[in-house]
Image 1 (cartoon, helix red, strand yellow):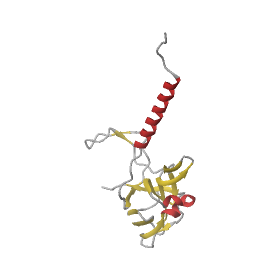
Image 2 (cartoon, helix red, strand yellow; image 1 turned 180 degrees about the vertical axis):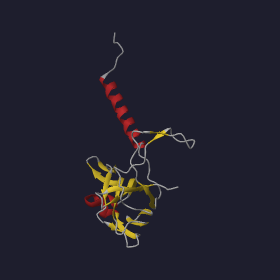
Image 3 (cartoon, one colour; image 1 turned 45 degrees about the vertical axis):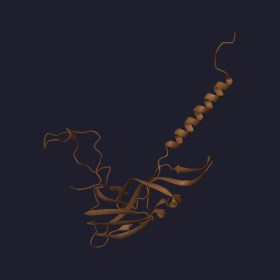
Length: 199
């Protein structure tokens, strides 16, 4: 009498089914690009050191966290001056930096962390939509403030900032801006500006 069991054909069929289900799940995991995103604009707040070990107990005003740290600028820059600054990355790849209240002169660099997903990339698995590892780049152009402390429409390009990876600035791409920073080129490229608001 033949006992019921699992046949080799059944194993192969089951594995094939699971593989096809996995491929289908992978296909569903790819979200479509937005219809459009014309530009990225960030006003810059002052970069402060992170509070990792709170040493202060907060009692007032109400509705605040119970502890915190004194403001410090040790791992961030404490020398640059900034009244305001704005970074505008256009869909065309043009980058415009505007600001005021800087020192005279003050040399500034722009740093960006980007996560780029590009369509129609040839790979060992054939044409694919590829998300590349995050890139943190410093634009090569140094931005120097005017005698009145202003930076007026200083223009950079995404391709020049990407350097050897300038191909990421072309093609059908979703470019996610993970982070932006202004660096004090006169003080070891320490960060003094990050996206934020001042209230």
